[in-house]
Image (tube, rainbow, N blue to C red; front, top):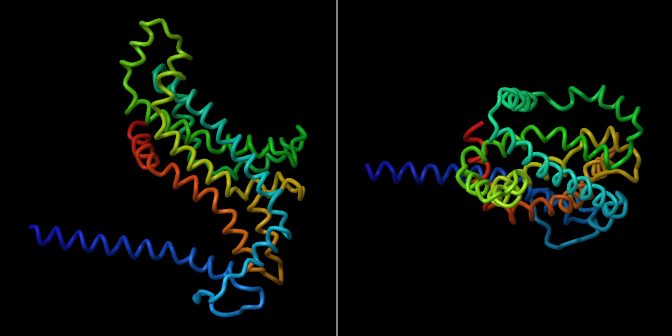
Length: 276
């Protein structure tokens, strides 16, 4: 039996290594492409014997990445902050007050999760034009909050039901604490794992958003990183070296965010999906 379990363990380890290598191949090609000079047409599978930063400087200047970085950062920061604040508050009410209305509202949020956001593009575009929010960071923030809020509420509500004990809240009520005070002083500090999960999922989604940005942020001064990267692709030419350098720069913030919050990520994702 032990021999069989050892073989199964080695097999699973080998499978995991193969899957890891397959996922690392695109990043390897990204590095070999980004660090080569513009006139180097050698195979993408061969790592260059030199390190050239000309693609990075050219991409930064040609695509105005400094402005795109600022737009993307502002949109991601405020959208994530609103998701955490409103999502946690709504989930707390839905998880703790099991009224018939709240159950229907929760079911509505879950049902909205299966609807592709692009199905609302035409009426949403008309609404944005009518209220005069085209080419503003505000419309990008609100669009991303609306798109990701149902999943945020789903994760927070599941985590609160399965992890946060009611006894702590009841004890605080006996001491005279208000509902708002109980949430922000007792409940919210216990939501760190699921907050980290929401941060990673939402920030990666918003940071990489292209479908809404290309429609609602058409002014070049409002372009986000994804739209700026798309400018390197034309009908007849594709500047792969510049794309690789720009993509590498654009991916670094999300990589650091994940590395910083990864210890909470799996815990929060598993607990947040236990009870829905």
